[in-house]
Image 1 (spheres, rainbow, N blue to C red):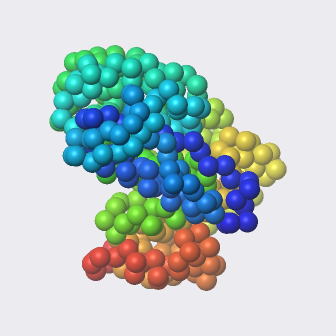
Image 2: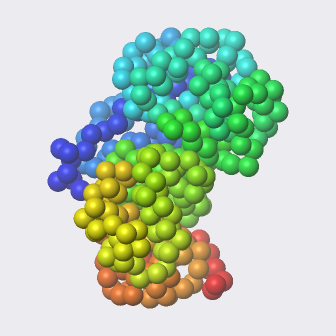
Length: 334
């Protein structure tokens, strides 16, 4: 992967904090982003891969007593992703004390950046008005206050991660780690995302699946045929699919299908299918006692040796090594 360093740009990511911020909602995304950049072979400076921003810059002491050196929001520049820290206790205090944050967030979004709000940080995002008539979530304790204050926002009480175009809400600090893994896959590639996920306590985390974002994750492009194809691949994951059979199913030539898929999704249909299979295989390795051969068959790969080679190429661990690394206890066979 280091040979590709010149071709991979580190996304410009910033974390927005203040004196009521929950420090872990900043430090965890920062470390995940730093790990992703280092996987690609980049040598990072002292500030790492994330710019730390606050209303006025300088040292900020968060709610837990941790002092963080920051830059002013006026020094942000053009961003790819802005992470809004969770607010400890009442989020309305931040809105009252730091009114400059809302116009900054609104400007950042209009410049094209993605924004991920952690927990009650979604109050700051909703205050911009850009979540009106869109789905969102927040920390469960503040559901009623959020619904009352922002009646035009479609509050999803049953989801921990919600996406609406380039706006994301994570209901908790644990959820932001899942979301950052997903976003690192978008900014870099699936291999980088899996490596980062495996590095950050996979034995206590459930794998983030794109389905947790509901139907919105498949709406990042407008090619209805490709959308149907993505759903078809998910439904037929265990079947021995081939590109010729898929193309025939959708009444397209392989060349046309590949070109449309690549343009819409950013990867080939075969690589997309392989990523789905590897993701499911990782879940089975963590949660079942199925043999490697059985797992390969479960994800539609008849040749277990080929499956093992592909798995190790992607995860840098063999299936057996991966299972040993992530398993904290013995699971019942299913």
